Image 1 (spheres, rainbow, N blue to C red):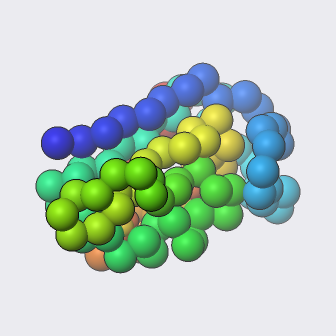
Image 2 (spheres, rainbow, N blue to C red):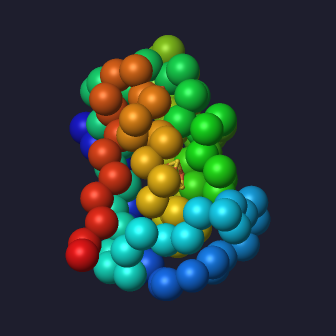
Image 3 (cartoon, protein in one colour):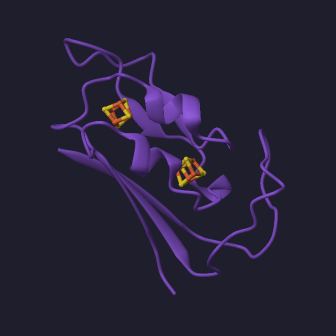
Length: 98
Ligand code: SF4
Ligand code: SF4
């Protein structure tokens, strides 16, 4: 099972919540963030390294082992790919249209 969230990115710094002003968007196209819940083990590294609070822990859901990670604010994604690069289980994919 995977969950996916995408949005049309807006050039420049946009959105609410935590920001990362030193990192402009790398694309003006749509961004799609996919979490593979079969591979995720709930370490929450992705949540802790995301500079814009795009990812969150879904405290209302229990997988039997942990609360799953969700894409809470895709519109704030800076395309830094920290989540994708640091996930030890390769469970996150961040795609951006050109
Ligand atoms: S870093 Fe990867 S394995 Fe850890 S919670 Fe995030 S998606 Fe799951
Ligand atoms: S690429 Fe990942 S770590 Fe970077 S802002 Fe987007 S969701 Fe957060």
